[in-house]
Image (cartoon, rainbow, N blue to C red):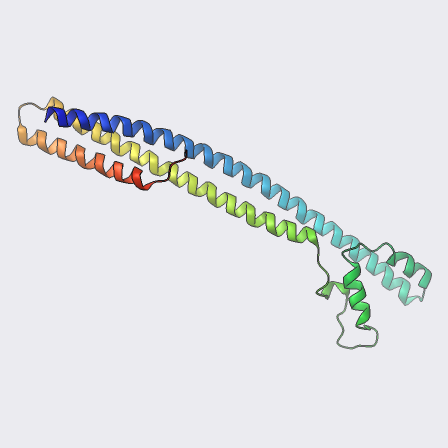
Length: 200
């Protein structure tokens, strides 16, 4: 019984150290992932802002082009067309091909055309999804760290009851009960650790 209690205390002490070490590593991972998610979110915001600015430029030039076309000022209209952004030109050309002045069902503007597409929007969407994924990984790392903290508590509980069993020398039944409870806590913690991913 003395040897059993000593083995339990030794295993529990090692398990407590390992669980604490893993909890610390997972906590570090969670902090890094949270930082990465924040940095990626900042890049997504910049891409969204860029897309908004590009869309504003497209709208402004197209509005000016409409005004010039309405005045039949072809020189000014051509001047503005040459300054259209590359991403806007395919949508504009496709819109012109629908003959909007004569076709009742034609889209009202090039912005309603499927050809109007901003790469900055794609970049913002991709970065937003990447930030969400990274943030979720951070949450998972935090949960794993918390799980290892619980394992450390279980091992510490096993050590308390194992130590109490060593001190109890008068009543054998009480000693057996304390060792049994200590063994149960230690086994539960060992199984949990065996099933938990390592941060190394």
